[in-house]
Image (spheres, rainbow, N blue to C red):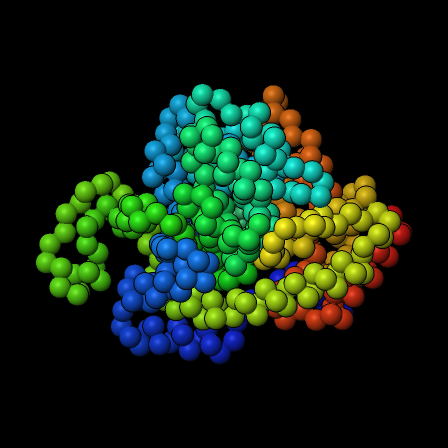
Length: 372
Ligand SMILES: Cc1ncc(COP(=O)(O)O)c(C=O)c1O
C-alpha cells in the first residue's frame, strides 16, 4: 500500500469554478475576491476579510500597519515556517524567539513571551501549530497589559477555535495561507481577518499600491484615484478566488474527516512505546493541518527513509528557524523547540485518506520503531 503525505482535495468543482472565472473575462481582483473575502470572514465570525497574494504578504502588511519598524522587536516562535519570522526582518525590526509551551503543547509559551518582553517589543506573532491555537486568552491579556500588537499566524488553523472563540479573530489580524499543501488550497493565496474597520481599510489600500480606487472600482464608475499611502501589489486574483470559494465549500467536511483520521491515529498510537502524541487536552476545535508525533528513534532521517521504503511518505514541521544560517545566534537557546525540531515526524493527513491507510501508516511506524 502506498500512502502519500498529502493530496489536494480537488474535483470537478474547482475546474468548473476556474472555467467560470475565465469565461467571466474578469481575472484580476474583482467580484470573486470580494465574495471570497465575505464568505471566509463570515465563516470565521470576523467582521472583515482582506484577500491577499499569500500569507507572507498578510503578515507583512499586518506588521506594517502595526507601525513596526527599525529598532523594534517582535516576539515570534521558532517552531514555524520561516515566513513568520522573515516578515519581521522585512520591516527592519528584530525577531526575538520564544520557546514552545511544552512537549504536549507546541505553541508559543506565554511565560517565555513574557520573559522576552523589553521596552523595544512592539508585537507578538503566535502561530497556531497544526491547527491547535496558541493560548490566546493569556496572550491577549499579556499584549494588552504591555501595549503590544497581536498578529495571528493562522495558516494552519482555518475554522479552528480556542476557548470558544474562532482562531484568527483574537488579534489585530489573523493571517491565512492557501498555499497548495494547506487545508484549503488555491496554489498561492492568502487572507487577513480583522474585526477593526480602520485596519481592514488600511490593509485594502496597502495591498493595492495605496490607491483609493482599484481597477474594479473604476470599472464600476470611479473616475479618479489618488495614492494616499505607499503600498504594494499584494492582490489576490479572481481565478484563485474562484478556487478559494470552491475549497471553502468543502472546508467543514475536510476538517471533519481530518478529525476522524486523527482520532484513529490516536487510538492506534496512544501509549505505544517510543511515541509521544501532543495536544491531548486541547480546549477547542483543531483544524488538524498536520498530525505530528514525537518518536524516540535516534535518527529521524533513517526512520523516514525506512517508512518511505514501506510506501509511507512523511514530513517534518519544522526545522527550527533559529537554527537556520540566516537566523543562527549562539546566544539563543530554545530547548523544547530544539527537541521537537529533532524528534518530530509528520504523518500523512488529507481528505481522501482512508482508515485503512491510517492503520497501515501506524503499523509501519511501530514496526520501524521496534526494529530501531
Ligand atoms: C505557519 C506558516 N506561516 C506562514 C506561511 C507562509 O504562507 P505563504 O506561503 O502563503 O506565504 C506558511 C505556509 O507556507 C506557514 O505554514
